[in-house]
Every structure is written in structure tokens, then in C-alpha cells.
Image 1 (cartoon, helix red, strand yellow):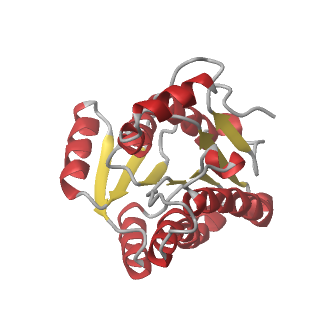
Image 2 (cartoon, rainbow, N blue to C red; image 1 turned 135 degrees about the vertical axis):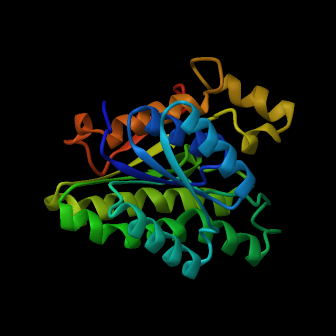
Length: 247
């Protein structure tokens, strides 16, 4: 699954699944533009990729800021001449029961998790259409498929990504551009590390494989969907959840 000659941009790349995706894509031969808010973590990731003979460049960004998205992608396109692969991974949580959820918490999660994906796709689609090749991969969640109490905003944003994926796949499929979603289940990341032990034990009972997943296991799937080997897959949601949700 060589990605030599390809340019990939990963949002939310400073940690967790996004970081693992950047490392895997770089190891597969892609030049990787890593985008996130934390400059220090981005710098460390660039150094790690370069230490492994990969190519990476940092682009500090808050994907909830439309103007920042536009200027950042313009800079990346100017530097690389193209973006072949877009990984929409940036995401946040602001958990609360819906009866107590503040509108600001709803808006911030929808803007970061869903609206940003639309904005990022808009910025790269022209380049992909011109060269008649592209891979758009949206990181959704098992909770966007089955819901989760206390996460109405997060579940709605991730479900929205699935609909966005299918719509984009239909719009650009004739130009050899695929758009797919990856739906992780319970993955060991900074986002899930704050869950209570009771929640984790309950979650494990619902996973047939009996363990949580790793960011690298998600990244492996992302790299496959970004490759030529996945050229006939589009509009698909690929589950990486240990059997937590089937069908």
C-alpha cells in the first residue's frame, strides 16, 4: 500500500488517532501535513516522522475557525501544489445530558466535529477534481451509529459525518475521488482516558474481542482506504470496534 508521491493532510494530528494516522501515512511514503492547535505537539511529531526518514510539515490550526481553515489550506496547497488525501479527524467532546446541555456546548462540538469537515473538504476538492484523484476519509464514531447517553452533541456530529461522507461520495465519484468514513469503537486515547473505571468495564463487556482498540489499528484502516488498493470502495463506513456494533 505505497503512498509514495501522495500528499496527505490530517486534522487533529497532535495526538491519539490523528497522530497515529500521520505516522502511518508517512511510513507508507506520503508527505504529511499535520494540522492541530498544539504547536508543541506538532513539532514533536514532525521530528519523529523525520527521524524515520519521512516527510512532515506542521500547520497550526483551529478547525472551528473558518478563516483559519481557508488560510491554512491555501498555504498547504501553495507549498505542496496539491492535497491528495484528506483525513478529517479533529474532534472534541462536551458531554452532558441533553436537558442540561448548553447551546454553546452543542455548537462547539458540531462546529469542530462536523462543520470543519465540510470546510476542509471544500478547500481540497478543487485540487482533487483537477487531477482526477483523491481520497477523503472522515473519522466518525460507533456512537454516531448507535448513540450514547450524555453525548447528544457528539453523537449527532458523528452521525452527520456519515451522511456527509455518502453525499460527497456521490458528488465526486465520477472523478475518481473516493470518500469513506472510519468508525472507531472504544479506542485507548487521551479522549477516552478520562472515562470512569465503571464505564470502561461496562464498555469492555459489550466488546466481543474483550479489549479496547489502539490508535494504530484505526490508522491501518485509514492507510488502506487512502491507497490505490481501496479504489473501488466509496461511501462506506468501515467499523473498527472489536465487534461492539455489528451489521
